[in-house]
Length: 73
Image (cartoon, rainbow, N blue to C red; front, top):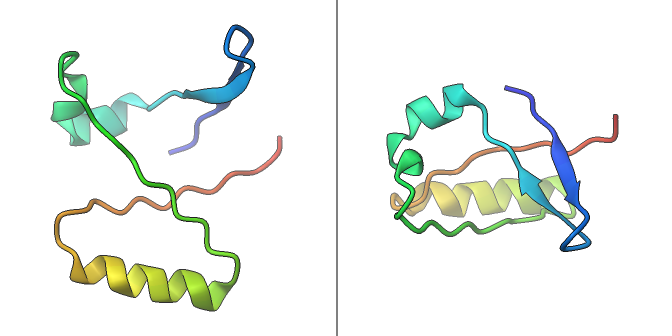
């Protein structure tokens, strides 16, 4: 799935990530408007650091890891 990140003028921040319908269909609970969700972003500065982080995440079964790449169009 590919998408876009939008700059929000009123907040003067890059804060809007639109989720594709395929993603929302996979995680139906995200469609519940009264539900609250949090996220944690992990930035691995090296390949080794990122691999170690992924290994640790796989031990914790409460998270749903999602790999997202950011790139300039």
